[in-house]
Image (cartoon, rainbow, N blue to C red; front, side, top):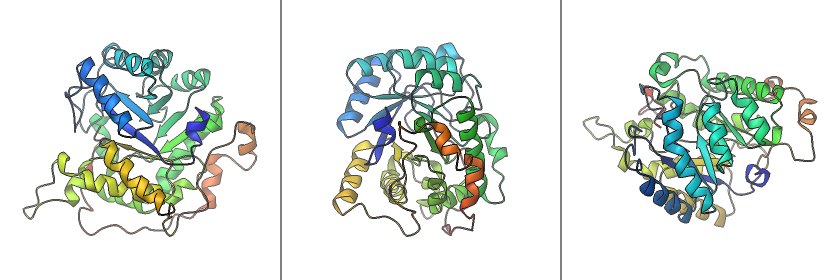
Length: 331
């Protein structure tokens, strides 16, 4: 697991929604056989992790209960793990995470960054597994109203820093923490573009960064037809690949995508051309604290909240098109 967090090459996380109502593929993989077959296909296409989710977090989505979520994801995780496929669990519930980790999952991908369930830190700490802390301000039903920022990059960085510090204080090892800016979660399209343009400021937190723009609605608006109709989800793959390569070139640890093959192919080209970095990307590829270094070693240089002051929060550019409007979590 530490090798995965400290991977030298970009990690590709393949999306497997076993839900009836996810924005892009809801219902396609609700059947166990279909879900397992798709997970196997994603792995063969080049995914390093299969991210299994049993609760939609698309804009306005209602929550399902823990029993329903567990019933959706647990059989899929068991089957994929038995086939030797690494799985992450996309959940904000400690109870679901604990059951799925026991069934063989490697990673907890928590869209709430630990805020939705205070017991999640204990589960992750005790399991010793990697934990993706995503920037989050509230559940899908009301997150559009929370998309208010003066400087979205500085504020997302600050709020992620607080989640990292809370995880460290709960005893989670520093070399198990991954952060995610949470594109579309309490973010407008303009916020998403700003976070993409200034991603190195988040990489400078010193933790691996997961980037997930796949098929999201702000890409659909960018690619709208002359009448202003957003591009359907099926037509957003090229844009998704572009965002993924740019994110990795800016220093992202990994990308979360629906179409694994296209992204894996593009990243193979990126590596073959010398893994070029974008202007403004800072230093070598970031990794978290090594296993030999205790978490407190990182904190001697200050907490994550303190370290954010090392970077500046200057304004970033954003495209003239599709720079307005809300963009939901799209999961």
